[in-house]
Length: 372
Image (cartoon, rainbow, N blue to C red):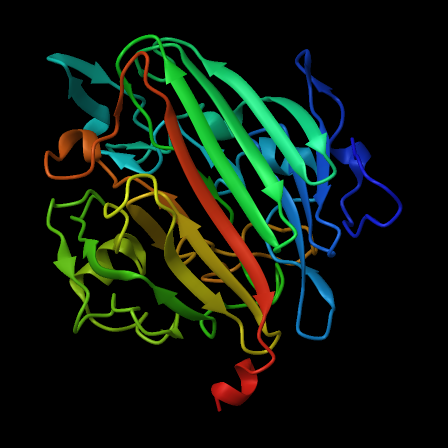
């Protein structure tokens, strides 16, 4: 489905027939958004997947900058890492798949070693959602996660809106309500390569993160509870630096994560309630593409594509290799339900969960000059 006029000419190379058919009585659908400036985002109602995102370089050439597949089968086969998906009910890890809420213990799916990851074996990324295109640049998905789905209490009603603005922003707004106390922590899980998907390593991308602290992990990838200072460590991205500059430094945290797979504590998130704060900026010197991340969330996971191993063939027909993409996932902290000092993730009946993430795109014609 596409709503718009002739000026919103489609750039996607995605073949609609490969994404629109019935699977076990559920209709797979494709939605294309564009903002009139040239940005274009293509979504599937399966997992609310961002299938492609067409963004111009400094010369006006468009490339798809998110990893993924050219057919729905690629996502259904399971040989992927949440490419472009909505993640929930709880993004990131929960230790031992257990938490206690109001004196009652709950046991969640164990799907990542001995832990619970990204909502379980059949999380939000692996179900079909009811989609409705509101305008040529806006899309809404709705659905209900039933009581004890993957072990979570409460019937959780979810609504997520995607908007491509005239300011070249992809704005994602999450809403949820429950009929029983539960925990909620949703995020978006696109794998980005600003030079284009399938174009090689992201080690030369310049990354800045608005964080003085991060949450160290143990050998099971679970936060220790510490809020460690980034200063003097490979985790100091307060000033932009190449993503790959410190990948190979001998540091216990890099060994645990096999690279960067850590939550950063964003500055300013708690100064004004529900305020949108600057989280990160990424620039790719060769193309001049720049992406900024803003959010209402207290944290952001930076993942440097450590587990991409070349076994997946993407939309370009090329394999996705080691550290050829990155993720910036705005979120509450991992394992917050078991960490008393971390921001609260409990949603009570009568309350509304709301979170906003903004991916803002631009070009920087001075990028090459400033990095030589």
